[in-house]
Length: 256
Image 1 (tube, helix red, strand yellow):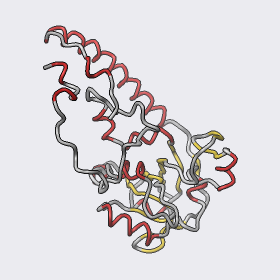
Image 2 (cartoon, rainbow, N blue to C red):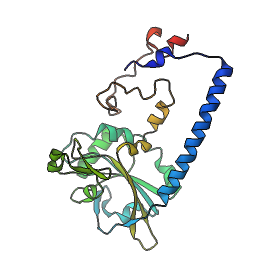
Image 3 (tube, rainbow, N blue to C red):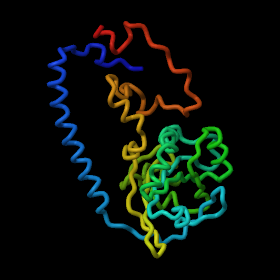
Image 4 (cartoon, rainbow, N blue to C red):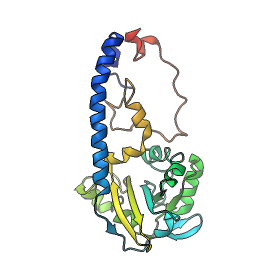
């Protein structure tokens, strides 16, 4: 872990702490109101009808995009970076997916189905899913243009030229697969509409662990790493969590 200024943090009286906490609370409330307004604007975006008849491989057989809703009106898709022939899925996408199983039954109560889509063949998906112990639905878009049409798969030539169209602009991207989240809605006539997609840091909304880290004195503790999430591993590849460090190395030691 990197060293930061948590080692030399100020210590104040409880009254002073309450005063500063209340000032921060006002800013937190303002941000919450901004978040609510942004969510309203997101819901107000126009929709695009999905005209392509995408067919996915699922453990239950071939299914159309409309059939993946499972009788609900809304569908959220995690675009998971697992291409044909990969030994394992992307570590960061796996970090996202680790938060899904507990959310799925709650989303269903709000008329939302949730699933994961990857380009890898179904057998390769199932092998990795079994290793990770996940229960959520995961389907294969192999043989379709679904991933490319929704901005998360690029050609080798695009990557080499540094001209991948990702997050709504042409930009360099280091791989042929990218993470994302897409949302769809189905009307009474069975027509499917694309309502929203988010990429880049937008996918952090699935990473509840980050929200909890943001509450702690050391935060995400990623400064000085070669890239954010460098520390992330597949959950079955972490070493045993380190024991409490000696007081001199603790972020709280300066307050003792």
